[in-house]
Length: 200
Image 1 (tube, rainbow, N blue to C red):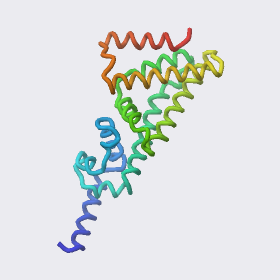
Image 2: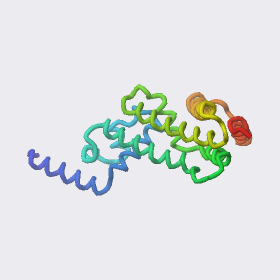
Image 3: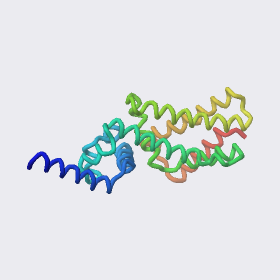
Image 4: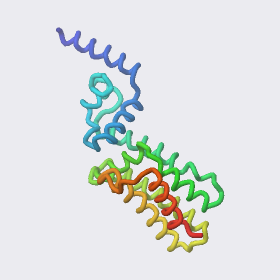
């Protein structure tokens, strides 16, 4: 095969792949891999196999693996923020917090990704995303607690405590498999968390 033929075939492959896969497809595949295997699972060759394409498709959309990771995590950040802040229209801050705690207690891939990213905070792409996500969530909680009548310092402390409870429970359940709760026990745990973290 001549170099010209090989180049032509590669171009055809890229064009065919471009028609079938978008950058968003690669981003979602990377997030799926992170959920299953951690940050190291989002490597180009395994992702290409997962998607059933050649690496040429990847390089059509992204110059490097780091560029893919950055785009994938920003995608996760946007979608997760919509989920987390979906309770924002609820005017009553107490009801808003209750709805938030119940919403985030559901099993979601986003939780698994979050837990995996906590194990990769030394990665230069992961750290800034996790910092932004955490700060936005704490700010959201702080505003709600301020609206409940807590002073600035007390609201910030309660927001950190609530967020630590969320992150800690994910680590216990997803990394250590603890605590092992039945559905009824989990519902009771959420009720206890709500009564503990939301002042009357």
